[in-house]
Image 1 (tube, rainbow, N blue to C red):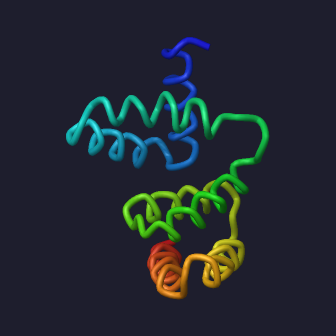
Image 2 (cartoon, rainbow, N blue to C red):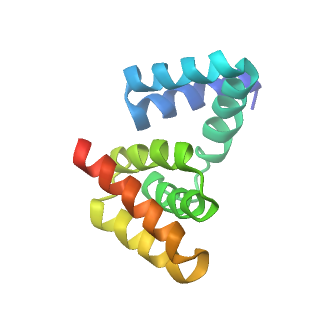
Amino acid sequence: MEIEQRKQRGSELLNNMLGTEQAHAMRQRWQDICPQFEEYVLEFVAGEIWSRPGLDLRTRSLVTIATLASLGRPLALELNLRMAIKNGASQRDIVETLLHIAPYAGFPACWEGLAMAHKIFAEA
């Protein structure tokens, strides 16, 4: 598949997972920091990895939340919590995913993830 096709697919997917307005604002922030980063996210992360047929978007979101919370990546975690809700993950799904990482990634990682999720849930 051509790079431009992957970028287009990534752009459409990001719009679906965030909403067009929020996706545009996020893309603009990435462009302001580094235009190549925004291109890589669209083309590779969204247009290739997230678009693969093997897992549904809800499952991908939960795996991503577990990974980002475990790694202590709050900016990406916040974004992916918002996308998880749009991808059909319930609050219970998200809380259970974060609780599940406690024995593997540590209770502080779980706690920080739960705190961020609580913030996102309160805004919804």
